[in-house]
Length: 472
Ligand code: FAD
Image (cartoon, rainbow, N blue to C red; front, top):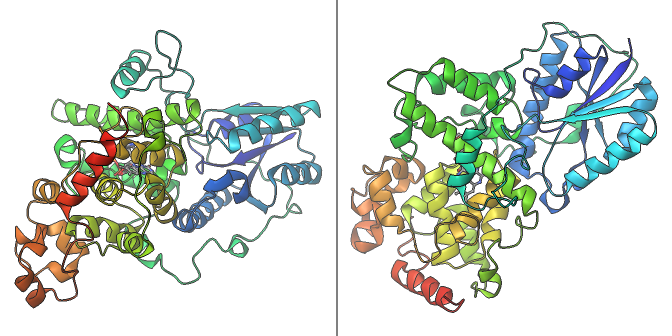
């Protein structure tokens, strides 16, 4: 039987894997391969939390392959060189992969495809991550969308999600003499074990993704539209890291949701699918505006007066010691679990880019290193949206007040108390703005900052003044 390399990247699953499926359907023995080449991601090499997740996800994929008679060949090095070696070692005649869309790796893949085809190999790439390719949807003028609603309207009008595909129970075995690296030698797991708390929440891998989807459909889906904004409740699917690593296909999610559709949950379901739409929009934007991971999409902000960074203040934000409880709760949740609730991501981001007036890249880079779901498309969209510099963004002059946000979305202060336990004895509503009663704060929470890093009113005024200088 001829052999084909199936090059796994952001598609660490067997079901709904178009590259694997094509190799099997075309009669090849697949050689599942993962190449560790972080430098090829340019300045967005995966961060520490992503690597910790990747270790477990690769181990899970290897175990799933072994249970079917195959295995995952893991090699470290430049992708071109590794592909070359493995092609020589195995005599494979074809290479199949599912596409990645990051600006650093897209040209690499295009160049590899050309070179390998010139050598007479069969090379095919597929869409393994998205409901729509980033170039599928275009405005009536043929350009990219910059506003979500028409983008999503057009997506719904052209809906064509593929049918789910289950990988076979057995896979052909390939030559035992072809050896890879031992996963442990890649040292993806943090040596100091700071990720220990992550795994109470997360089970990386395809089985973990399927389980998270089942839990969501049986639980938080009902009420999603309102509870998705409540960090004090389990109101969302927690599928973002699974989606980022490709442990589940978005079209599997929509198919499973449709199977569970009832009159009672239809609106929640549509609301959820719309959030998947924001992920599609993020990839659309990243493809059409590949400079946006580091540069403002909106040129109005080119000369915006960002404040000079005070390293102590930035460290206080990163460590959740700003003195603003909802901000600190979010950043501590992030550190402890590798995740932060979406509403709180917006609040902490807004505090950084508006009250502190630090360039959004300082926040984007911190998230990049600490989130298990760090994803270049979604992170760029999230930060540029919050900063007001991006597509369909929250206008810069709309400054989130973290106190009223907390009152509205964590009304009993339970999310704050969970992540900032020193405030447990500060009663609500004082828990939302404890600096208002310094004597109480000193008595019951002496370890907590007395004052916010920046006075909320002053921070807001400073942000608006800087914004006014950018023109009308
Ligand atoms: P659910 O509410 O269950 O949503 C389902 C899925 O839809 C998510 O898994 C995600 O893939 C997608 N989704 C939901 N909201 C958004 C959104 N606003 N933008 C794009 N996709 C969305 N998401 C990431 O996956 N990676 C990131 O690096 C990332 N960085 C962000 C940074 C900032 C500043 C902000 C404001 C948001 C960021 N997000 C990011 C988006 C969002 O916060 C997360 O996708 C969401 O919190 C994940 O939780 P969930 O899976 O339970 O979400």
